[in-house]
Length: 348
Image (tube, rainbow, N blue to C red):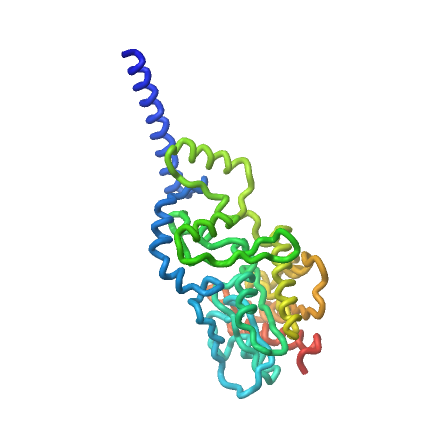
């Protein structure tokens, strides 16, 4: 009888401990989730509900397979000489087709520069987009902006782009790169299958920051607290850190190699964020400092002078409400691109 009472007491004590840790975990998850706990079963159910979207995803994650349209411009009836690649700052959100800098550059050069920017693309997706959909144009321009080189180029978005409750939410998976050597190694998108997607996440460096909230809750919460105070977060290796700069430089070098193999001239247009025009980050302007070997034939263009002149003369005419460049900003970028292309001998 005494043994039974002792066993019952021990069980009651362990249940109380579990209750304390369970309550701590639940409160933590609903109060900012600083210990990065998540409900695995909920995430799995979201992945299952999103499998149709997974099947429709393209090699880059989005847009859907087969949908990589060139942004339409007013007709110039000119032959194609180049193409512009990148994310929303190349696509030129918030301005009309006629005001986007690739079109204004086409007007300045008197030849068509196709606008192949895709909203939300990082440098990694831009590389894959170019690899899959390049044409036969003489030169290719990558419009590089700081938001394109955040940590998501070496991870998925599920553990970075969180829901309002600070929990990972199942997004359409995207490819990412590993950097074990001097060449980026592609980790492609998985099949539309729960187990395959979970294996994809297991390779994702950003997922290593997170902790499954499960029974025994005392163990999962203790592990989360220990990790919080004993190791740096992957998400802390953002723009400007030596690691991130090296990854960016290697992706740029890889795209330059592809262009060279295809007989195309590679152009890097290093665009500061609108809010940084008057004080650009030195590390961003020198982003190629991490390239292990010089890129032969590289044409690098810095539009900061044109954008600074605009910001000094018309301070309210640079940035849109969404943080992109205005029509006047796009005009300045196009003027800088035309100047740089001529200086590199790629345009007359």
